[in-house]
Image (cartoon, rainbow, N blue to C red; front, side, top):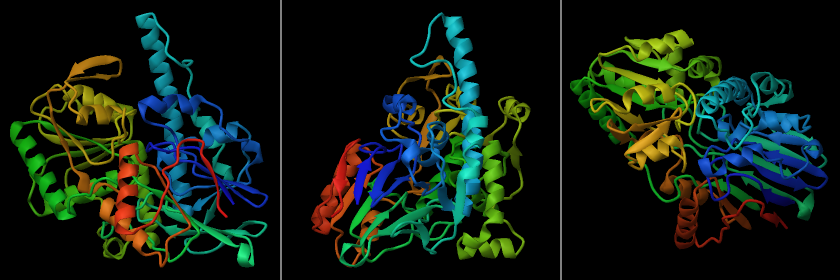
Length: 466
């Protein structure tokens, strides 16, 4: 078996790994690059032949894991794309939305550049269109959790629940026979334990090689109860100032979890009852998928559905789908909560709400998910006094807050907890999907706590798994 690392190496986005097992060539994930220094990679040819791939295995449907699938198909890939049924359903929504956003952004940039008399670094065309995104849909082949899937030859894959988002998976691949048999585990994005909505992450006892995410390899999250306390305080203080709480959210899972928390706080009268607006047609669609796939949710959430009390519903919640509805939000002068994508503020409706609120001292910009280096969200969190939004430089006067406890990623100690489930160290442990500092900090921690060697691969590095 041979591994070649072609994405999310010493960075967070663009997840993609090429696995060669016997005569099979498999791609695990095909994610979009979202950090500003690496955006050019989205436009570059893949460092492998897309036509020669036998299958793509998808851990989950966040854009940084699935967002370049339309480009893979454009380059000649003909499938299958194997994932859980829930991931396939979410990916259809996410990719179609991404195609629409690419088209809208290209048109917006073309007008702006014409007005400014300049050109950008790339042609003013979409990376891919919504129609091109749709061409990936027939290639999806859904599989159930915990059931082996024959990939051909002597190679099988098993998808295990990752506890990260709806339908997310860790993928265990076994190839070969007898003494030549090898097992490799791809962690995907590892969720936290005891989170609402989804089940806890799966654990493994053995593997020859492990490819593991390291997003929060250098720090832990606050306790979920403390995160709710902080959310209650931030919302109440913003209401008292007469401002808006603007929350960039990923449409998949973070939007739903934040709604769940807001509903709990409101029911407990820990925050005032004010309008809460989910301004994201994609997030609204994804929210509906939870009811369709309730069998794979955690027991508490399944019980809510069974009792006729869906987890996403409370007085004052408004679900906005259309552009016309979205435009009415910034006319609201009284306090409200606004959730919109994208989660790193790189595109989508959130940019318009930021533009309307980031200069208002009474408003709060609240981040609840990871912000990759170079993204607009990261620049705001870093304390930039001025940021550029939709081609305009605006002063940052709003209150800026971040709550780590609502992240869908395991923190440092939970990453160690996941590794401790292995009865013996894998022969090879690779740390990916983390900024350089986070991955190397986790590497040091693993060496100190477990005594295991590990590698933080660079883009393009290749390794034989003997």
